[in-house]
Every structure is written in C-alpha cells, then in structure tokens.
Length: 499
Ligand code: GUN
Ligand code: ZN
Image 1 (cartoon, rainbow, N blue to C red):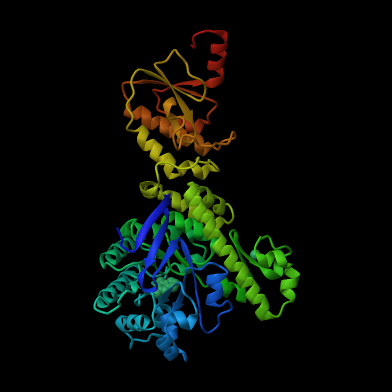
Image 2: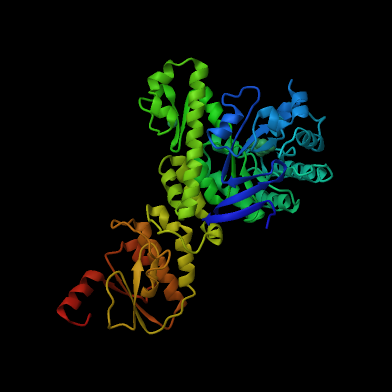
C-alpha cells in the first residue's frame, strides 16, 4: 500500500481515494481536478478556485516561476502566500518549455530543489514527453533519460514534499508498462502519465486508453495516478474508470480565451450557440447574446467560470457514480456524446479483464444500455464463473419458466447467459435489461452457455430461447438441444410432454 494514498470506494478500475499531502497538511479527495494557475495571466484567482469552485489542489509551473520577475517574491513568501491558495499545490517542472528551448544548463535536481524552496507540496522532476509519432528507438532512449533523471534526484533534500515520478514511453505500450514499473520502483509518491496531450488534442482516445491501461499494469492499483494535461470534462469518466486519480485543467482558461465552451459532450463555440444548455450560475444568468456583447476580459472570465463549473460538476458526478457502482453507465453515456469517446469506451472494454480484477463483486443494478454493455467486466466475470461451475443430469437453460421434466431449470438472461435460479437476486444477475435487445447481448449469452457446457461434458443441456438470432445460436455448442420457447409454452399449456 502506498503510504500517502488510501482507497475508499471502487468501481471498474476507478476509485475514490484520499491523497495525504503532508507539506500542506491537507487531504485531497480523488478523483481531483487541479486547475492550472498561471501567475502571468490568471483570469480566476486561486482564492476563488478554492472558495467558489471547491478546488482542494491546484498546479502551477515551477520552471516558469523560476524564470519570471516574481521569482524572488515566490522564494521569500512561499507559493501558498504568493498565490493565496491554502490547499495543496503541485508544481510542474517545465519539461515542455525545456524541450522547446533546449536549456541544457539546468538539471532535474536543481529544478526540483527550486520547487522545494518555493514551498511546493508536490514537485516534478524533468521528464521527456515523448510524442505519439516517435518510433520505438527514440521512445526508449528518451525513457532511459527520464529514468536516469528520476534516479538523479534521489539525493535532493525534498523534506515533506511529495515527488512525481512520470511515466513516458510514447504510444509503445510495452515501454509504458516497463516505465511504469520502473517509476513505481523509485518509491516516489505519485505517478503522472505523460505526453497524453497530443493524443487528446487529436481525439485519439482509443490510443490514449491503451497507453493508460499499459501504465496501470506496471503501476498496480495502489499508486495515485495523474493524467498529465487532461482537462476536458468529456473524458474524465473514461480516464477515472481506467484508474486515473488526478487531472489538471489548463483547458478551462485556455478555451475561455478563444470563446470555447466546455460540455461533457464535447466543445462548443460561443459564436455558434443560441442557448446555454447548462445549469451553472453563469449560464442561468446570461444568454449567449449577452456573453457575446461583453468586453473581452469579462466574457473570458464568465466562460472560464462556466468551464470550471462543468469540470468540477462532472467530477462530483463521477464520484457519486463510483459510490453507486454505475461508473461504467456514466462512461457509456459519455461515449454516446462524441464518436471519439466511443472509440475510447470500446478500447476500455478491450481491457475488460484488467478492469475486472479491481471491479467490486457487488454494486447497484447493472444496466444494459448498448451492444458495448455485453463486453463489460461484469459479464466477463460471470462467464469465468460459468466455466468453473459443475453440474450433472439434464439441465434446462431457459428464458421462460421452470420445467419439472428436467433435473434443474436454470435462468438465461442476455448478456450474462445461464445461471442457477438461486442466484437471481445476486449481483450482477439483478441486471436491468431492455426488452428490445441487441444481437451482441444474445451472442454474449450464447458464449456463456458455451462456457458452461464445455465445462460439464457429462451433463445434458437444452436451451429454451425466445427467438435468438442465428449468429448467437451458432455460438451454442452442437450438443445443446434447442427448444424455441414459444413451442415449449404451447406444450406446457396442452399438458403434453415436449417433443
Ligand atoms: N504536462 C502535460 N504533459 C506533461 C508531461 O508529459 N510531462 C510534464 N512534466 N508535464 C506535462
Ligand atoms: Zn454553464
């Protein structure tokens, strides 16, 4: 167990946790959003972020401060007083700036020491954000440099400051997994997954999911994970479901600067809006025309406020979903808001076995909402159980009633497939399923039948189904007798034995 991070509730690989930040003597509830504070051009003061929006933690750039006119002020007063923020403050190292301007004079140790001296609560060494287009060799080289730097800071006196150990590796998932294992082995406190920004900007959410899943395999479940540069609320639920705990948003301010309005279904442009479809105080008090008529700085502030309300609101929704156990339903709803998020959700389900390992055994009712639901970890877990169940005799697997002509009559519910009637009230078999099911649900149920049948070669099975599609029936093993349910009901009504 990581000694600064404690897990409270979980759903899929998502979790509510408590990050203990000793230097500011604060506890940050995760998943948490860290608004980016840029002392040069801050539209909304850190004090407002804390008091009005409930930010428990923010992030600022230590390198930019070290190069600025207020460097000495930050050193003498300390970051908390300098920014006027009493919660936890994370500092970034300026890796992007350093990569751009190639300042080879400063070392990771010096950069981290400066962050310590200005009173940062969580510091970051210099990592190399390897872009997605980088080939394996370059990604591996840069990773080795990042890892050397992580080792080079072991002797820096950082007192009670927590230290980030970033995970890089570009889009090469084996490198990401190895980097994550190495980052964890440093014993440092928090693990940011780096260089995801270009993937998110290009709407490559499928690749982003694969990268996060790889990093999580290397990190294990106990480390707090920060998804560097992730500030769009439409992807928070997806990233949380994979096990990300911290997000930083520069988006709320950057987007406001050029009239972009964040929503959980994507980004809108103020010039194109006729209505403000949001319940926040800004949107309730103004029409789009009123916002458009404001002076630039006032409009920018109002849009930044809206962007923050939406972002923090989505995080509260996510935490409530984790408590209820319906985080994947929320991810699914977000996947329906934007095709790029559907790619992300489908990629997430490619890792259903990985999610299944952290997913709690019991939650609120499973809602089957689309063909993707059939690939959820709960379905997978049920199928693994079926493969271990042992039965004998003549077994009826039926979507209808019990039939005394068989030794046992099991229920069959798509997408789960068969289960003994006694389990009807246990999770996830209490699922709410639509009457008009998709083919994927039947196919998943059929593969559940196959798992059970293949594990019980001595038993005889009959499947009584309500007109399953041919593709699903093809998945049912040959030796299972099929009995379309209408005909069985008729025979029962006439009091005859079925044929
Ligand atoms: N901000 C966004 N992405 C990154 C990253 O990969 N590394 C650092 N240090 N900061 C970031
Ligand atoms: Zn709003």
